[in-house]
Length: 301
Image 1 (tube, rainbow, N blue to C red):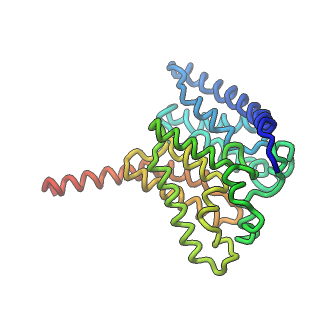
Image 2 (image 1 turned 60 degrees about the horizontal axis):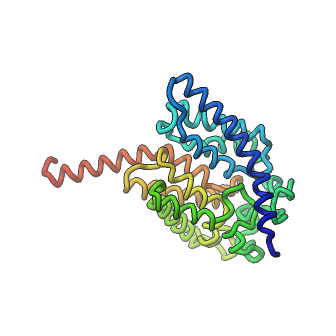
Image 3 (image 1 turned 45 degrees about the vertical axis):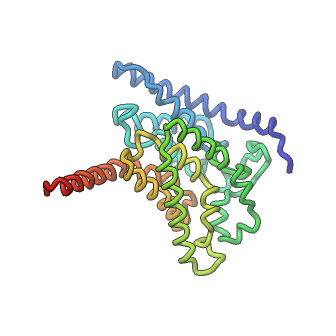
């Protein structure tokens, strides 16, 4: 069906703006409070978090839960560690994880996408492709269109469905040297490699283990997470080798959670947070390995 792009954009703004306003109001107030208590300037880093947080939420989430989620992300995901630049977790993802475990019925499940079809510009009402992958196996691919997933004509959180927009964002981040292309590429390689392994282990072509890698790339929050979340310069690995390891493990863990956990068809959010925790450990051992290599080269060992 032909899409009325003007109507779609206006409908999208009508959904996004209330979530964004609540995010800025609650999160900004908390940032200001901590800045006053600690007697330092308000850091502009929250502007990035405030833009990303609404984009990883379902459009039907109540506004009071949006405020609660960003409050949790700002306070326990960042400020308790000392503020911007000191946090080991991505604040936006921390807030989303809190909402997922505190209010799972509002964050996942078919009801989130079918309860309020008017929230969708194209009137799509149905389960997400990832949910269908697990329930129907590769047979679901017969009624799904890959290009619909690529362009974002599928249900999902506000910013995660359009892979084309994520690729545009990736190009901008790489060109401006804000985001690491190594992390983005290694996320893809980790996902593709793990998917191929599971494909080889699939007992039959119709099994959910047989879902091909090109579908794993364009469904769920993988593209958005790999571009905008995994590359967070504060919570990601800092060494070049560490970036490759960090990204590859995110891609691998994403597929493992998607395929091996029937209760949770998406794995990108948990994979990034999990690797945020281990990023300092990865960097530590990369640095230690570099030191030992130089010591051997200089004959100090």
